Length: 392
Image 1 (cartoon, rainbow, N blue to C red):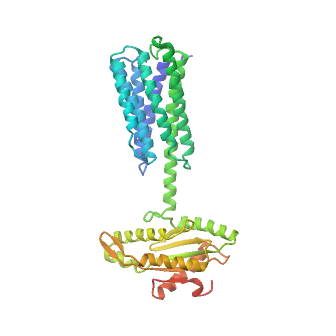
Image 2: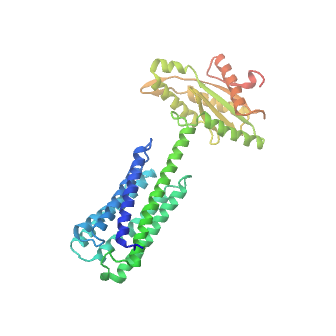
Image 3: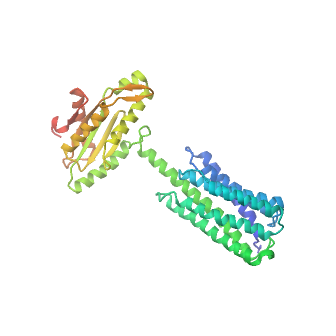
């Protein structure tokens, strides 16, 4: 049976880290949309792998320049991990405290590496630096919020960093207790085996946690693409049918009235024909922003297609819905749309249908569409209620 020694585990840690870094880099290049933070994480694992392999190449007893290089790559790895989490969490990337610690830590590494020929001093310098940096990393991991699809990954990664912190504190205690008796990682002591084994688990677990974190972000972006209109960033038709359908069921269960509005920009085709589709897209985005600003928190707003939009108004009677629709109409006609220094006067026609306890969202849309058709026939720039055009 082959004995396990710390030097072999150093090699294992280095290879695992290099492979994990390469895999994250391949993931970064292969994803259709770039995930902020993924590239720094890849470089961090590669840098950590280089540090471990440098230590292995020296037989675990680092001397002079080799120690300075190993410490430098290790510090760069932790800084890149921190920078990656800040990018991933959309937080400011300023890391004055961490960079300052790293500069001081590297200066200490140069001194103990080139002028102090004692392994325990070098180990103490690395441990103290790690003890100062790891809590910052844990805070960065957990500060991303309790987002669905990322909770497990954040717990795994923060737990791994916490475990690493315990290992480093333990190693520092060993340094303080045994001091000059420590000569390097070449000794197969229980302390060295546990320390290097813990780092092996950390590298594998960190890679697994980062992949989970990225996968959660990718799933969230795909879900957003499936349910969001890419131009206006509001709900698309599919999402509206789902959300409005659930809202309608809830309102009926609570015996509350609800109303559906269909909005259509008048003569929108003229904008595209005269100024081009870029101008038309700009008008649509501004239109969506104006309507969204005039709605309440629980209202469901979506782009139905082209220049047609839908609004579902829960817990709203016909009179209140008509008043709200008139306010929305005035929001559109009251101020010109300005895109690329071109000002365009626009109006909107609105059809209104109300829930009578039968059918579903498709039937409400059909009724609102008929009311909208009448609004167009009556001169546009007006609100028409379905009851004014016939029976449902």
